[in-house]
Length: 110
Image (cartoon, rainbow, N blue to C red; front, side, top):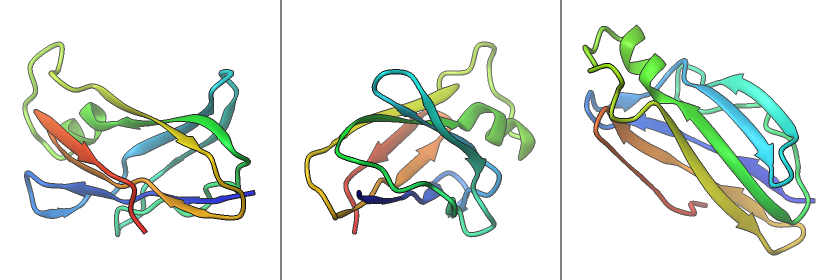
């Protein structure tokens, strides 16, 4: 099994993104986790997962609307999905998201 963590940073405001809804989905489509980021933009409670393919979905349009940001309809970014694979066993995978209403970036963190 592998541990998984994420951290969402709102680059347009320069703050951790609190309250972003997150869904973790296995490659076959089963939902493994649903939750939201805390005040530090982190999501405690993500489960340990075996090697394989996964999707992390971040509801970023809902987050920015809740912060009072006017978004067009439909928004440029609604749900950001990061598709990633885990090839190791017993490793830690950190998948951060840096996001604004019009762009995002991710990488394998530590």
